Image: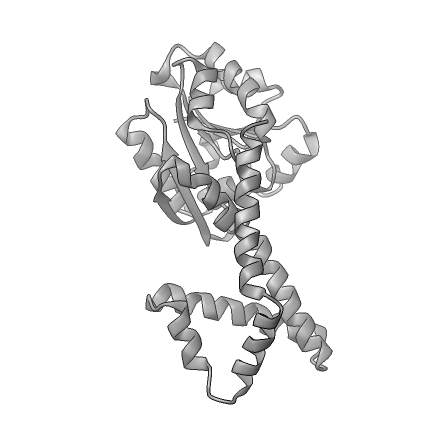
Length: 269
């Protein structure tokens, strides 16, 4: 298997480097291409990866593709992959493009490639990713196995119905940005109370990390874990009331809903 990374942006780089670090992919089996030279230079600083001088050169030398381009570029790239392919037996494409449906991509390749939609997220870079994927009509069982192995190598992965992938985009795809914003706000609160900035960020980040681990590792509902911290008349319930006064829960729910709607909109452009 020779894998071509098309698009060396943050997500493509995170997934590729994460898989290399866990040994699922080797540097020697990966080739990269991006129209922006600086993007190629950036990923090559992290791994010894061969770069193609053109998209056509990359396509001609690979049989599996990680398609990490903007949604409006997907169909044109797929048409080039299809033109160079002898049929679905020798071309597998994993696309991260938000909103672009399997049926749309399959129309672009006209039966000359197997398509899988994936939605990873940037914590894949450190092996803490949360990803989902949906299989196209012509994929083989081993394609699904490879996708599961690839995504699981950098975190957790689950197969979902394609109709849910936009919601995955709004939840785990965009979710790290929501969490970073919360960490920043939590640290700012500590700063307001006089805790030095470096310690404020250290405490905020570790608090989120520990709380997330409690949910993941105990299997308990977040509400139950929250109740264990919340004493009658105590500091935690006072803080929670302030969050509710600011519509914290509703705002987060709306963020997921809005990001999901945007993913669907991108697929219709």
